[in-house]
Image: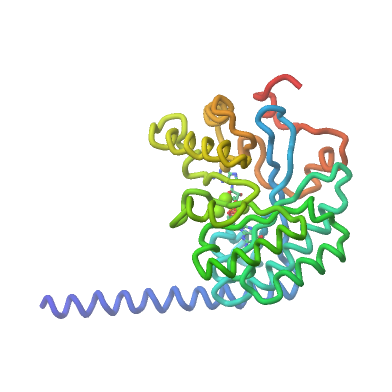
Length: 288
Ligand code: C2E
Ligand code: MG
Ligand code: MG
Ligand code: MG
């Protein structure tokens, strides 16, 4: 009897796995078509200086609206793209689009672009990056790439060699989702990052969890010791902002100030007419 049940459970898992694999393959095919039809778009999320309240830059984030399913989250389709190799085409498109856009910003604010480990390890990554900078005319100093710690796990020496050459171009490199990887501190020593982005999971509870508060304070201390600016990701509430301000965090990013949105929504800023977000929440910052 038990044996029978066991087999039933096994068949159930097999069927579920089959379904998951099929589902992935369907999405992968649709994603391939979406790339070919140029159906991906970019949104931008402002980064805000805590002391000044000014917008200090934008992170570019890719979006995919599926013809039937609607919006598919990048946390769903980026892993599929990484497994299938489609990330190379996506990454190239994102980089080109973000650089083309940022090159038009009169105030020359920096743009941050997420780079997948698969993309970073591709043989032509640097050549592509240089070509895009040359073709779009974007000053390398206006570009920042964001690397998650998982990118550093595979072939550390080669990754560092690539990142060194990226920096030699004048492009800055930020460590994304800091604290969620396997060896955050070793990674900080192995490569001269220009910025640390503290993962939003630590910010989420910073004003009511002693553990999160201690961790964020430690990362801010690390940043000041290493002379690296620290950006807090995922700031949603005033209490989180107040904590970060009291702890002298340099920059924040999050729904509290703005969700990621089409760049046209930020035209007043990118054109240099204004340095502050119009959002009501922006008034939570010191007088301008
Ligand atoms: P990430 O690079 O850490 O980006 C931050 C994510 O947090 C974004 O999710 C953003 O919309 C979200 N976020 C920002 N503020 C808040 C907040 O206050 N609350 C909450 N709950 N979320 C907030 P998104 O756009 O869904 O992207 C998820 C991840 O997908 C990114 O994490 C990044 O790892 C990846 N991704 C997105 N766009 C690209 C891309 O163009 N290329 C690559 N390789 N990866 C990308
Ligand atoms: Mg990022
Ligand atoms: Mg992040
Ligand atoms: Mg992330």
